[in-house]
Length: 384
Image: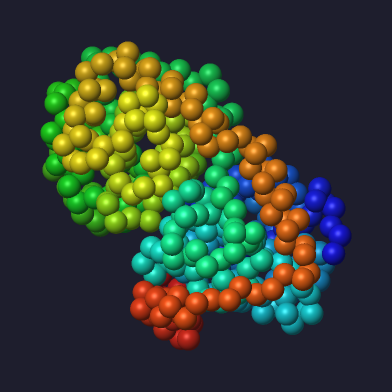
């Protein structure tokens, strides 16, 4: 099959599209960076950007789209579980079309019930992992090397937004510690850690967690130095991020975090980072040079205090963080070139289905039994 890469049409597929969600943002920036003809098909849509060509899955509507336009690649973004890939491929099969699938895995493959299903593995021509930790996860080491790539989710968007942004000192030496992540990634002791930072004039700003109805919001109400911003649009998140003095990115030790956009935006904005949590984000840092990686809770407090009391150190670390991004993570040109290589490999009509070890089936049933039940009952929406 011969396909001109510059004319390749891509059908992006994901479970949920929601403005501000990390995976949705990855899809959106990929579309803007690639500048190809495309359509997005989501199992569920919560909110969208006005300039996005997207549909919520409905069999007849997708069938009409596939009849009216030829798509060369299905680019499936694997985040939360749903049956969206199967639904889409069933429509493709009904039309007697053959479209190779690229699956970008947006979490650590072995994390709880989010691991790839046997169906997703068998139907994918190529797998892209967004960090080295995920790429090297032993649970997927049976996937042939020629069917795997590691490509960071870099984008020109953050770079352009951060042009001209300078790090500045606030009045009264106020230091804002900020974080942006979902409720499930908020460690139960994060307020206790913040309280122990040895600096008086400090605030803790939290983005991405609802202002009511959860333990973080209730704990925040007990304090006069915590600001809850809730779930905000991308533009608003950019403006809030600019106000942070330190990005305090403490995550639960058992978490499916990867090298995400929130951390990336903070570094582009020259915000120094103190990180504690799973392995993948550590790939960004040279400890003590372009950020701090704490190995225990006491070190989170130590490094945060160090940055709070020293403006020049914050500025130095923040600048080094920005300078290091393209060197350690790569450029947009690197990403697009690597994806072109992936797409080219997928057009190989002789590609065979991947043989899945019996042990993987056992692990999948053990970890994802709830997902299996949801698949048979069609209750994904009800159960989340």
